[in-house]
Length: 105
Image (tube, helix red, strand yellow):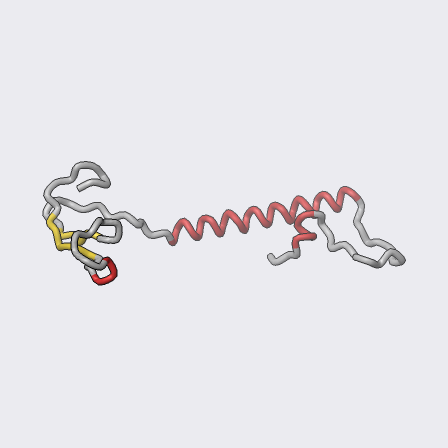
């Protein structure tokens, strides 16, 4: 349900620079009910969006088991050889000897 921000916040779209026209502002109860419905609809749409995004998320971390082959990313490693631009970005493959914790091998 697409709405302009005025409808969600105050319940109607104000007329600007038109002081001679009569206003079509609803009475207070209708106005408050409309604002409440708009906010509820916006909150439901936000919750649906969050659920959809959480459902599509793929885990970024894969746990390795001993004897798996892994490559080491060399971006933050201090390199002994010459120019960093020309050196390898990945080192390996290395075999995982043991699992120390869920992030250290």
